[in-house]
Structure formats: structure tokens, C-alpha cells
Amino acid sequence: MSVFNASFFRQQCYINGHWVDASDQQVADVVDPASAEIIAQVPMLPAKDLEGCIVSAEQAGQQWKQQSATQRSQLLKKWHQLILENQAGLAELMTREQGKPLSEAIGEIAYAASYIEWFAEEAVRMHGDTLTGPGQHKRGLVIRQPVGLCAAITPWNFPAAMLTRKIAPALAAGCSIIVKPALETPLSALALAALADEAGIPAGVLNVVTGDGPALGKVLTQNERVRKLSFTGSTQTGSLLMAASARHVQKISLELGGNAPFIVFADADLERAVQGAIDSKFRNAGQTCVCANRIYVHESLYDAFLQRFQQATQQLIVGNGLLPESQIGPLINQQAVHKVNQQIEDALAKGARLVCGGPASASDGLWFTPTILADATSAMRCAHEETFGPMAPVFKFTDEHEVISQANATPFGLAAYFYTQNIDRMWRVAEQLEVGMVGVNTGIISSASAPFGGIKSSGTGREGSRFGLDEYTELKYICLELEA
Ligand SMILES: NC(=O)C1=CN([C@@H]2O[C@H](COP(=O)(O)OP(=O)(O)OC[C@H]3O[C@@H](n4cnc5c(N)ncnc54)[C@H](OP(=O)(O)O)[C@@H]3O)[C@@H](O)[C@H]2O)C=CC1
Ligand SMILES: O=C(O)CCCC(=O)O
Image (cartoon, rainbow, N blue to C red; front, side):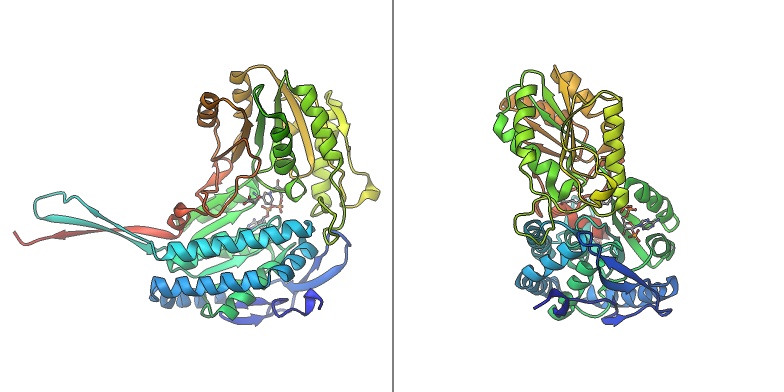
């Protein structure tokens, strides 16, 4: 059966439990980046339709928060189960709209579902605290309450997981939520909503609206009923949203761009470091905010690392994600190709050495051969900008102090990776890296149990883990005075 006949395949917005078109009938095409085929059309919801959605979602949230934590948990568990039952179809749909290889899409569906399971379990542990009384007759209590109506704006690179790690904690905490997925990849989001509906999550608690980011973002930040905004995407858009959300002082979480250093020290296990670099750099064709962006290798291992890294990179198979052998799918659009090309051309002009791959030509379309540049320096754009594509610049370094200072010389602070077998260095370097997440001897760090997020221009707030629920709750202090 074609995935386009599946019960979860939807081309309408999901608002207050109903599947709706835009009131002015405007639509946008959804294009398969591998074939350039139009595979669906979704509504371009006008602002006034979103205003109506906000009213109904807020009302639904009033009921939802009255349900017991156990009831909310059970509904989340049912949704989790339905997603896993439909894993293959959801993954195929994701590959069609996003381009990533089917094996990665299957992995992302499991990863997305794991956040729902995690927060279904956290829902029943939303504990407060008791305080030592400030006076002889005073007692203090702290309770956690849902923040209220939430909005989530999500990107195209992880069309399912970036939604569930916002929706699941919101619902677990007792909040309702409106999600606006990226226009490139709305189908996975609508499919998740269809399964939430089937799971019995009440009407209005979860809403998915499609449309123009800036126009809908304006409504979501300027309507005072929306009490929380969670965004994943570029630092540029995140900082605009942060400024806009100041108007009504919305609670905000931002998961923004990265520029992850990946450091191979002289005492690293070379084979593990090469595998970690492949895993971290080329996941989702390099279109991940935690991808290794700058690879620093100690001079004593530099040539050996480059040789092994080149061999492994040249074995990666670029192709349509639906083919089982494909490991690198197309990039999302022409702007993405252009950005990687510009970084390569800039680096080559400034003295980098092309080890393999190279800039894409016009006839390559969205296909990009995995590329390695050796002898990268801090004068190059790739040292300062997020690449978001399958290009790895390799820098040579001589001492630990120097490489840490280079690693930290960026406004970003999301993830960093390093390889060493020295326990003292593990602690020393992990503590000195100015980031929210560190991988030691691993290139893959993500998990529902981990607090995902960054510092500096990479954002604020954490998703996943027990801390992820805090973003959707407020503390309330209750002071009791006993009769003397
Ligand atoms: N941290 C991460 O995971 C990601 C980082 N990026 C980085 O950003 C670069 C550009 O990618 P791009 O897709 O343009 O990223 P954006 O940050 O512009 O888009 C991400 C989401 O934000 C929405 N959006 C865009 N502008 C606004 C706005 N003014 N108000 C509210 N919502 C808005 C988009 O909606 P719409 O689809 O309608 O435009 C989409 O849903 C990439 O090359 C990469 O470096 C990109 C994606 C994810
Ligand atoms: O923001 C991103 O780029 C997606 C993060 C993927 C992950 O959770 O590892």
C-alpha cells in the first residue's frame, strides 16, 4: 500500500480535533527533495484562523490540566504505541518529504516515540517540595503547575523528533499546545497528530497548523493567551522570536544553531575517532545542529586520521533515501547547497586542501558528495559558520590549551566532542568546553534521557530528561501560617 493511502496521511491542519483547510483555501506544495515531485499540498493558514485555534486550544487546556497525571500518562503511552505500530509507514513518509535515508528515518521515528514514552513516565513524577519554615509558625510548600497554552515552531531536519520532544512534556505537564512545523516537512507532523487523535488525546489539546513561519510566528508571540514558546531552528529566527516573545513575557525555550568542535587528542583511539567523526558529521547529510562542524586533530595523528577519514567518507553512498543502500540523501533545498558550496570555495581560496568531494555543480541538483577539506584555519568561514551539510574541515593543532581556546572561539555553544584515553583530560576538557553537551569518545549523544540544549547563541532551555518537564511548568510557592 502506498504511504499516501495510509490513515495518517493528512493534507489539512488539525485544529480542535477537526481537519481543516485554510479559510481562504490557500495551499503550499510539499516537494520530495530527491525527485522534485510535488507529493502533497497543505494549507497556508491565515492569521485569523490561527487566532481561533488559540482560543479553542486554551479552553481545551483548562480541561486537560484537570485530568489526573495517570490519565495523561496513559494517553501518551497509547500514542507512543500507535507511533511504533506505524513506524515503517511514518519513516517512509519522512523520507519522502525530508530526503533522509530510510534507515535514519526509521531511527528517528523510534527516537521521536521515545520522548513520548519518557514524558508519559515523567508525568506521574511532577513532584513539588516542602520548605523549612521561615518562622516558628510558618510552613512552605512548592507545587508545580502547567504553564498554560504552549506554541512550538519546528524545523525540517528532524520532522518528528523535534515535535515530540516539545509536545510530550507539554501534554505530560497538563498544557495544551499548537505546533507549527516547517513548510518543507509538514506531513510527518500531521501524521503524528492523526495518531494522537486515534490514541484519544482530547480535541484541542494538540493542534498542528501549517503556513508561513513569520506570519504565524507573529500571532503566536503577540497573543497573550500563549504562555510558552518553544522553537528549534536557526539562531537568526530564534533571536527574532525571543524579542517578539518579550511583549507578553512568554516563557521561552530556544534550540538554535551549533558549531560543534570535534577534537582528536594525541592519545585517542584512532579507529574510534574516525568512526565517531563519520557518525557525527554525516548524520542526516550533515543537517543536524549537533553535527561535528570543525574537526581538530593533533599533529601526531593528523596524516593517519585524514587517510582513514577519507577512506571511510568515500565509502558513503549518496542516493535516494528510499533505496536501502543510501547513506546520504539530498540536501533540503538549493539554499542549503549554496551555503555549503560557498564555505568550500571560501576555504579553498584561503589555502585549504581538497581531500575528497568538492563543491556541487548546477547539474547535481540537491545531491552533494561528502567532502573533506584539510589544513583548515580560523580565517575560513567554515570555522565560524554552521555548515549544515556534508562537508568536514580538518584543522591541525599542537597543544590542549590552544585547541580548547579555538574550540570556544565561537558565539555558538551547543555540542562538542573529543577523543582521549586519559581520564584527567576527560574531566579537564569536558569542564572547559563552553557548550551544553559534550560527547567523550562518542559522536552520538542524543537520547530522551539527556538534557538537550545549548548556551550562548545556541539557545536556552533543555529538552528531554527530567529537566525537560521544567520548561512546561511554573513553580508556585504556598506559605501557610499555623495558629500560634
Ligand atoms: N537548530 C537546528 O536544528 C536547525 C538549524 N537550522 C539552521 O538555520 C539555517 C536556515 O534554515 P531555515 O530552515 O531557514 O531555518 P529557520 O530557523 O528559518 O526555520 C525553522 C522554523 O522556523 C520558522 N520560521 C522562519 N522564520 C520565522 C519567523 N520570523 N517567525 C516564526 N517562525 C519562523 C520556519 O517556518 P517556515 O517553514 O514557514 O519558514 C520553520 O518552521 C540552516 O542552514 C541551519 O544552519 C535550520 C533548521 C534546524
Ligand atoms: O536540532 C537538531 O538539529 C536536531 C537534533 C537532533 C538530535 O536530537 O540529536
